[in-house]
Amino acid sequence: MTRPRVSVITPAYNVAPYIGRCIESVQAQTLTDWEMVIVDDASTDDTVAVVERYLTDSRIKLLRNEQNMGAGYTRNRALEQAQGEWIAVLDSDDWYAPQRLERLVAFAQEMQADMVADLQTYVTPAGKVFMVGWCVHGKTPRRPRYYTPEQVIRYHPSMKPLIRGDFIRQKGIRYASHIRQSQDYAFYVEILIKGARFALLPEAMYFYQIRPQSITTDYGRNVAQFWLSCEYLCALPETTPAIRKTLLKSFRYRKSWMLYPAFANALKQRQWRRAFSLWRESPLIFWHWLRQLPAALHRRLFAMEQMYDPWREASQPSPDTSPTSKC
Image 1 (cartoon, rainbow, N blue to C red):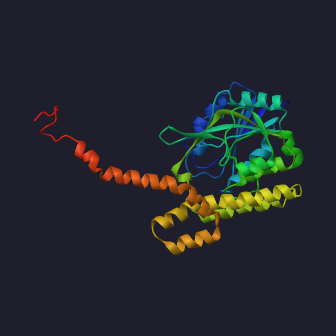
Image 2: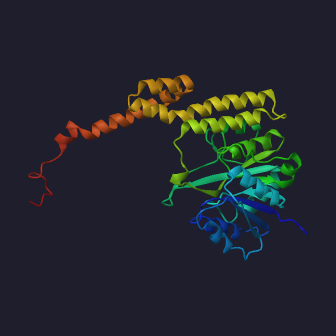
Image 3: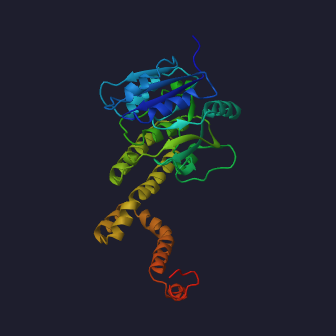
């Protein structure tokens, strides 16, 4: 039995309104030699019923967890079932452009890469494009290029890559299921630390659905989860001292960004003790605040000008003297 060219792995939990679009985007691919492994993580809505409508397509497989196990465990279960030459990641509320798999497979072969990624288009609930990119702290290149592990760590990617299946099978790489929120970051960086060659194709072919309920303001929990990722990666035997140093530096910088909204809100509310405590926890917050200060002052001044501009008021004709008045 020949294995498919691409295995698309999709964890699903309470995504009944979205997963149909997700599946149909895979069915619409110009590359038709694929399988899609969907693992439902004990959904309590109609997610399973929606997926079952598509099971007439023999390329689509559905597995179900008996209880909710989290994204890491669920993705690992999908990986264990995936037989493809390439592994493609697709979240259940997102979707692909029709040419994505074909373009990325060809790109990976051209670049002789073990992992490739494209840009993500972030779409709001209203259907509007919020932004296009691939990482949090780096610039988007104009041309295809390779990235080292240190560069990827510094840029902190947000991507859904295509990975050579044999590479992760031979290296025994899996998602760290004890990490609840950033296990995908740890998974991709581990692949690079263990020797994968990574290239980026600057074309936007992955559509990321922004959902309000998926956005958290629990900054302390986010920091703790990201630290678990860094701790896990630092402990890998393949992690060099240079990579470990980059990981720890990235954590300090990322931590300051995670805590900055709480710090800015504390200043706004004049909660000086709270602001001081956050600054003590992450001194880099102060530099973020300085960088944001000019823009904040500009917004404040503009608002004040809009509230009261005596010159604009004096220049406005009264209703009695206006040439367009219809009194």
